[in-house]
Image (cartoon, rainbow, N blue to C red; front, side, top):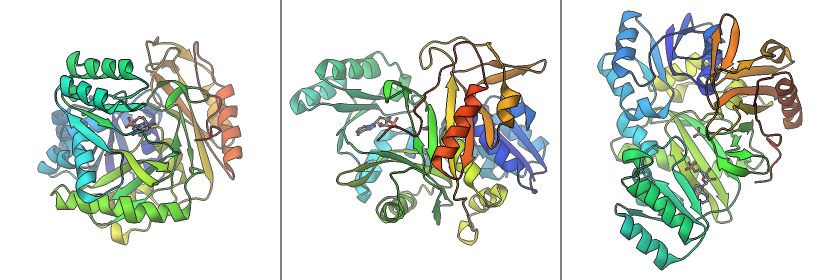
Length: 422
Ligand code: AMP
Ligand code: GLY
């Protein structure tokens, strides 16, 4: 098969590597890819948002499957456009991707179908949101922009002043553009967070092994929220009994709800869960693989990945076994100094070969470019240093050994991935 992966971060590097393990993957392209991905796949100079470009490339190369990995092209209808051109695609159509791209849609969906989530109200005028906050007077208050906001659209306000600032910057200053036309204000929940990605073709759902993200920039879960600074799999808080409970109360009801709404979901459905004292609740849905969750989940997949995604795209997941390794995996993100704020680009990275050669270590590139055989930083999150081990301790020790071998000016990473309590 000839395949194209759309996207260019650490998640896409992990997807490309996994596809290449399959004897069925004759050729793998990636658009636009990055410095590390270019060592494994043929990178195509097309933006991940260039739907017309991706469709014509797929036709020209007679591709067998296009894997659309990021949220924005999914929300913009890239899968719809591929289908219309007769090209098989992995990922949801735009009307199903709305489960991520509109928090108002996903919250109303959960309410309508009795899927456990935080209580909430929706506002389309800032004055009403502020009046509600004053009347409620309960903190922390959780304020979310309705639309996509690069993972930055959620503000946990500790008092009215912070809440007011959040509402004004989202709804009046439009810091996230049209994504801030509406806000959701919701109840603050507590408990360990768990990420569960699941393959689904809209009829069958097969959850993958669980994982845990570390979203805050600094050790001890301090500092600003980021796209994710590291992950482990499995998530130590999630056991078989909890998995079964989530299947019955969340996973199956969500697939069914999307069907009833006439928006069958096909692709990878990501459940961001919180295990609250009142049971598991949905914090967010994503319509795609998580980043950096993918980097710890896919290495544990034992079944041929091409077989699994083909079965999803063709609606025959019920007949496709999906098996997982019992090993643990850990991913430590090395980021540019200053991330998630301002950072420098074009800083040379050294030590990559030796990290790749540390036993069991794989370095997924997130934001790099390659020039004359050397790698340079090109983004906030630069590398995801990942390792498998028989235990989580072993996986973590290997991943951190890999990190120690890599150098670039200003590199920052968390030293407590897999160690924080919640
Ligand atoms: P999200 O972008 O929706 O994943 O939200 C970012 C982070 O905000 C989540 O990972 C949670 O840690 C936190 N968060 C979101 N909603 C809530 C909530 N209702 N209660 C407590 N924390 C929340
Ligand atoms: N790591 C969280 C996400 O991909 O949304």
